[in-house]
Length: 318
Image 1 (cartoon, rainbow, N blue to C red):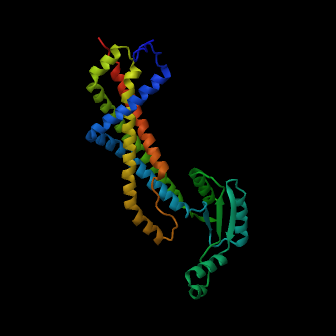
Image 2: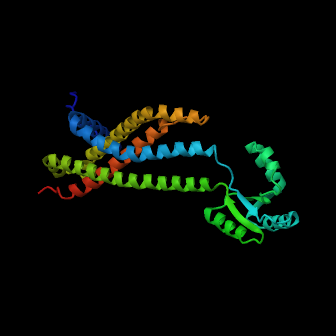
Image 3: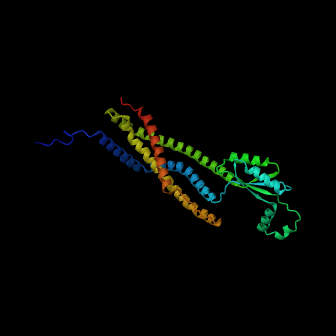
């Protein structure tokens, strides 16, 4: 008995196997096509890489600043300067009133004699201050608010302390920390806003690239759809084209950032050593590189899906 010719009398390929086979074909074919056009592919990767690298660089720099300043941060605290002629007994009464507030964790009283002694020891002006007949420093209360108080709550507490009778001035000792936190928060939002704008531009450029690729293969797509292929089958190679463009752009952006951070790390680390800091400038790391590649791939896949879906609807065989 003769064996059947190849392709004749054999069972049809299972649907799942065919689906996987076509995915492999589409993935490898689109990757080979990209490397056959190195200039166009490189420019597309460069656009995606720059769109991802700019906001990523800002976020990494902000993370390094936060890491350095976290070592210098201390809990929020107010210095409440009482009026100079306030007796010690009245200062203790004010302490009890302030300490009874629900937004205050604890209060410490520094009598004016102790404050003068501290000032003399810190400045080395002991002899000069001993010659002063009257102590110019007032009694001082060190007020520590409860933990996790928002900036609005701290402002309300400051106004309440200023309204206490016998209080001359309220100084927010950690005001610089609140200002720094506001600057860092603004920087993060700025980086996110710039990132969204850059990624929208990358999506538009990738979508236009996919449209040009579809136009170049218009006749091929028409033949494929004429013999019964659906839009998903015809769209698949272009989805992989967008995916590889995004992956490549993310990798290229990570490489550019790595070179930039190597260039930046040495002077920054020298500056940190001058301030006796154990911190060192850190770059993206492996997870950062992976995140950039995944984000680039997601952008490329979305751009390709949107462009291919809209274009393939217009390519119906006649």
